[in-house]
Length: 263
Ligand code: ASP
Ligand code: MG
Image (cartoon, rainbow, N blue to C red; front, side, top):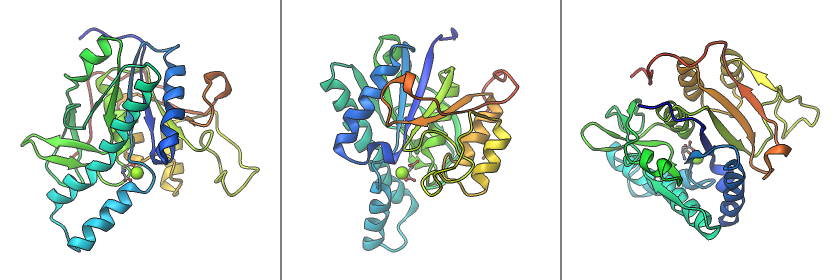
């Protein structure tokens, strides 16, 4: 495969798509990024508490739902987000195509509700990017080799974004949050918290292992294995020039070949 230059993966979490109005805002953030990157794939989480609500709903029907049916249900949350984001972009005259995890070629093991990514085959995404359109991918989900819909465990869409970034040979993966970056203390509680400009993968892992809910640890591990640069930043600033954020990277350039998760 040619080394596709200038590819970006942008990941939007539940807080960034909390209400219908949020979709217009993040559409503007994406459109602003199109000035710097000509190939952009976007990974989205379910809206705010949607996943929790779907799990509650399942438990009302069956306190211990079969894992396959649990995955079938909870993957709906991300599916709502991808379709709404494509609609918001369309309103702004921007062509975007949404894909489920399965359509995106995110292949996992068969362990329902806790699946690990084995490989990513973005056959449907590449032609969309080649055509100059945006590809929107549902986070948190994939498909097993047997064709079953799987989920990656709570918070799994960070890992989806990094896996997709590796498969697309993206320059970096940007995570859009309701905070400007990664801080030494919780910026929502301490207003004198300091933001890091840059962290190594191990420093970032240390921070998340101490309990900061900034990125899922698996996503950082996967980025570390593959030398993928991560950038944590705010969705509240539409213009790139007003945003800094925290870069997470290692000394190593991109690793040879793809290394996905250990099953
Ligand atoms: N929506 C899923 C969850 O809430 C996945 C994610 O947000 O990363 O766990
Ligand atoms: Mg979520």
